[in-house]
Length: 204
Length: 204
DNA sequence: GCAAATGTTGACCAAGCGGTCAGGATCACG
DNA sequence: CGTGATCCTGACCGCTTGGTCAACATTTGC
Image (cartoon, rainbow over all chains, first blue to last red):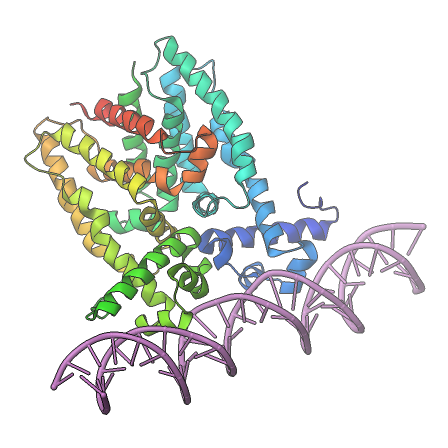
C-alpha cells in the first residue's frame, strides 16, 4: 500500500534523503508550487534519480503524508482515560504546541494539503482521523457527564486545540511579524497563554 | 499604488469580474497552483483580455490581497474601547466566525499566502497589521489593568481568536470530514462553543 | 456618423514542467 | 575477480505555463 519497502542500504539512505528534501520543499511551496528540480537540488540528487526511487512527484508526496500521519496524531492518541481530565487536555494542548515548534514543516505540509481541499488525503480524514476523533470525543463527553470537565462540545474543543497550536507553525511569518520577534522565545508565552485559556475554560 | 483605477463602465465591470474569478481560483489552488487559463475560464474572458486589464498574474493576486485586507481587518478595528470588555471580545470572536462562514474564499486566500511565507504580503504584516494589533493589544491590556478581564497575553489572545475562527473556513474539508456534516449547520455549534470558551476564560 | 480611443482575440513564443530512456557506473556476492 | 543486479545520469520529449502582438471589433464623444 505504501511505497515499496526499501531493502538495501543505499535505498534506505536515498529514500530518506528524498523524503526529507521533499518535506522541506512541499511544506514551503505546497504540492503545486513545488518542482522535482527543487526537491532534487535540496536532496543533492539528480531528478531522474528521484524518479528511480519514486514513481512520480505525487508518489513522493503521498508517501510523505502517509508516513507522517501517525506521528502527527500521536499526541491525541496519548489522551489517557485514566488521567485527570483537565490535566490530560491541557497536557495535550502543550504536546501539540511542542509539535508545532519542533516540526513546523510537517504542520505546514498538512495545512497546505487540507487547505487545498485534501485532494490526496480525504479518505484518511473521513476514515482514520474521524474514528480517532470520535473515540476521544466520547472520552471527553464521558468526563463531562461525570462533572469533571466543563460542558463544551468535544469535537469543537479538539478543533480549537488544533487551530490554536498549529497556528504557531502554519502562520509563523504572521506571528513573528506581529510580535516582532526572531527566535522561538514566543513559544514560552504561547504555552502560558494556552495553558491559562484552556484551564480557565475547562474547569467544571 | 494599487492597480490603475478603473474609469470606464467596461473597465469597472471587467476588473470586478476578473477579481472575483481570481479569488475563486487563487483561494482554491494557491498562487502557484492557479493558472491564468483557469481564471480566464472562470471569468468568461479570454486570457489576453485578463492581461489587458492586469499586467501579470502576480498583479491580479496582489490587487486581490490589497483590496481585501481592509474588509478582513474590519472586525478587529471595530473593537470598541467604550464597550464591556468581555462582551466586546466575545463579539469580536463571533463576528470573525461569521466572516469565515460568509467569506471562506477570502480566508483561504490569506491563509495560503501566509502559509507560503507571505512573499507578497510581508510588508503589510510588519506594517499595518502589526500597528492594528499593537493598538488593540494596548486596549485589552488596559481593560486587564482595570481588572475587567482575566490576565491573558493580549497578542496571543488575538492569535487564538484568528486561529479558532479561521479554522472553520481554512480547514473546512477536515471539519466536515470529522463531523460528517454537509451544510453549514455546524457553525451554530461553533458559535456556542467559542462563545463559552472565551467567556469562560476571559471572566476576570 | 465617423474618427479616435478603448476593448478583444487567435496565433504564437520561450521557458519550465513532469517524466522517459539508453547506456554507463557502481555495488553485492559467489 | 567476475558477473548480474542495482544505481545513476545527460539528453531528450511532449505539454503547459505566463506573457506578447498584430489585427480586428466595439464604444465613446464630437
